[in-house]
Image 1 (cartoon, rainbow, N blue to C red):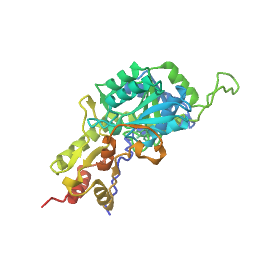
Image 2 (tube, helix red, strand yellow):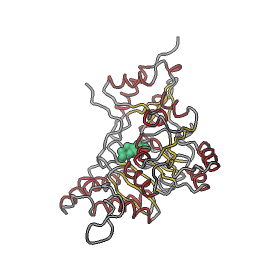
Image 3 (cartoon, rainbow, N blue to C red):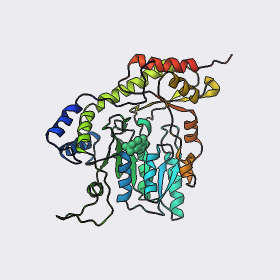
Image 4 (tube, protein in one colour):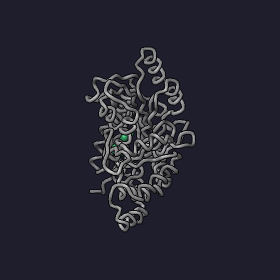
Length: 378
Ligand SMILES: Cc1ncc(COP(=O)(O)O)c(C=O)c1O
């Protein structure tokens, strides 16, 4: 059997080991320590934010942003519909209710026009949401300016879920640095990884220090253990931050390789009728964290599930595009604003193996299987 090709496996550079060695040598094997401080500083500088807080996951970063905003039972939070469930779960942790907004086809991210209509309507009925969680999907920025203008008009705080979009650009800057808070993930499949972890970035000093406090059981400044609000154990460990520092140094290389993999797929697949690629919106640079195709079964002759199974049979991992939140049983009682854009992307979309250690022959293996699924009309 051929070596398994994963969707986006960890890719260590070797530099990580030096920082991990330093962590061991200093015996900072606990949460917190100099590697965490350095990782936060280096990360903030890399993305262009004033503050960064290293946490145990991207989910924790979204959760603490909502806690900081005081979101509670009865509140509404607008969330992108086409995303991983981690964007919306923290809304439920707070007992609040998500309202989902459909994608636009140019970026696959939240449609700013739908958001504007929704906020206009909610403002009229006095039911404005307490926050908007905007997702930057698969390495592509949403149309941030337009979304931010609408949010600012109604003073609704914007939280950017950039878990999948580290290394992407929006008008030259990093997504995640435009809203009140930005969230990144270092889960094992992300463009850089600490095996598990997350980062919250912000330019708001109060938010940064509150999140830091909340993530370490919300201890009040006192020599003994004094607590006045609910806290969490969400801080990143010093050992994992050491891995992150090594990974951050190769981020630009990783983006370059991801984009190269995408280009190769395009070159080899573009002549197949019925296959299209996730577009790159004109406002930014797509990191191509994952190469994503859509398959039109009427033209191609097979659907995306047949391709997925054919790849799996040859030991290659591919994955359907996220199932929209409004179609999930978990959110069956939640409001959805939009039509069928995200649903169609789910029905047709497939994420292809996109690991940065892939070689050209690995890409050819994937392409050969996809090509073999094409059934030309006679
Ligand atoms: C869009 C999105 N949001 C949030 C998360 C959560 O990140 P984490 O796994 O670090 O909690 C992920 C990835 O896992 C994601 O893809």
